[in-house]
Amino acid sequence: MKILEKIKNSFPSGITEKARALIKNKWSKRLFYTFCSVLIFTFICDRWIISNTKKQIFTDIESLPNNKVGLVLGTVKDASGGRRNLFFDYRIQAAAELFKEGKIKHIIVSGDNHIAGYDEPSDMRDALIAEGVPANCITLDYAGFRTLDSVVRCKKVFGQSKFTIISQKFHNERAV
Image (cartoon, rainbow, N blue to C red):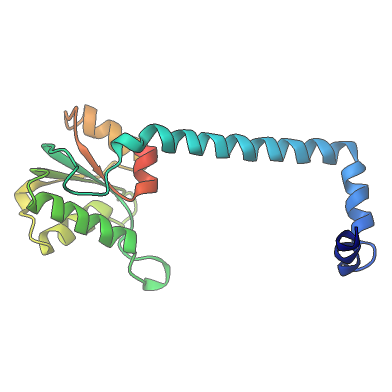
C-alpha cells in the first residue's frame, strides 16, 4: 500500500483525479477499450504471421533452397539527411551473395520510380553490378510500389511460380 501512495504522491496534485474522471466518462472508457482491443488484435496477428512463416524464412545461406530467381524488394538508397540506408545495402549484399553462391540465377529488382529522380530499381541494379552481378542477370520492375505489388508482379508479369524474396526478416514475414 505504501508503494501505491508513493506513486500517487509522485504526480503533481490533480493529475490522478483528472485521470479518474476521464476513465469514468462513458465514451472515454469505450475509446480506451477499443484502443486496447485493436492493440491486442494487432499483436496477435503479428505473432500469427511470424509463427506461420517461420519455415519459409531463412537466415542461413546453406539451408536456403536453390531457386531460379531472386526478388529484391525495393527501398530507397539514401535515408533522410543523406545517410546511407542500411536496409538497401544489406539487401544488395544478400542478393549478390546468393547469386555468387549459385542459390539464384537471375535477380528481379522491384521498386518505385514514379517521381523524377527517384528510381529504386535502377539504384539496386547499379549497386548489384558494382557487387559483381552481370547486368544481363538483372531485370528491373518499375511498378513495385509496395510489397504485395512486387510479389504479385513477380508471379503474374514475370511468370515466376517459385522464387526467393530478398529483404529483411520482418519484411519477408509480411511478403510470404
